[in-house]
Amino acid sequence: MSADDARPPHTPLGGALRQAWLGYQRLLDEDLAAAGFEDRGLPDGRVLRICARSPEVTISAIARELGMTRQGAAKLVAGLRDRGYVTLDPSPDSGREKRITLTPRAQEYLIAHRAAARAIEQRLRDRLGQDAYQGLFLLLEALRGEDQPRMRDYIRRATRAIDDASEPSD
Image (tube, rainbow, N blue to C red; front, side, top):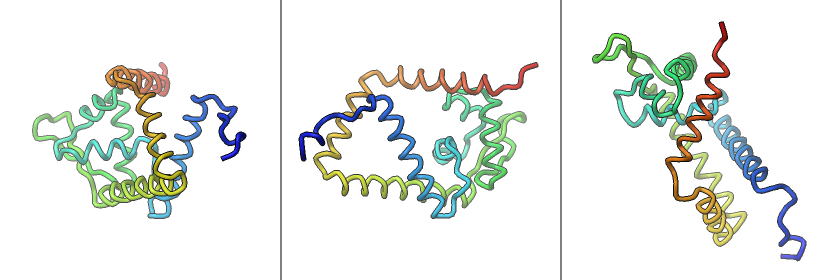
């Protein structure tokens, strides 16, 4: 490593992290498209993982988990239904609620997503070497901090703000 390689890049850390996240998402998109999932949307994987945890998941439960309105969650679920990832059935507990069930396509998507994420991690590990790869995780742990609930609250507030901004005004 030369002295030039040891200098930090000119991009501030926050910008570098955003660029890294976008790069990671691009790599996932490419791997998932190659696996036949060109229609991937950013919250799809998260919603499908929530649904995979329980056969009794409802739109209201997804809204609570994502920290958004029920209407916003219903839009996400409708998009997944329209693309063949979930089915909606009446909830046995409430006539107003719908129970969400994963389709075989959703199961295949989750398997492909896990495989793509593992492949990206392995490519990074191979490229960086184990010590640098471990250092990356130490950096991420330091940035994450001890107070996870605050981060979840921040994400919920940001999600609500995005959801509210997309609501049609009267």
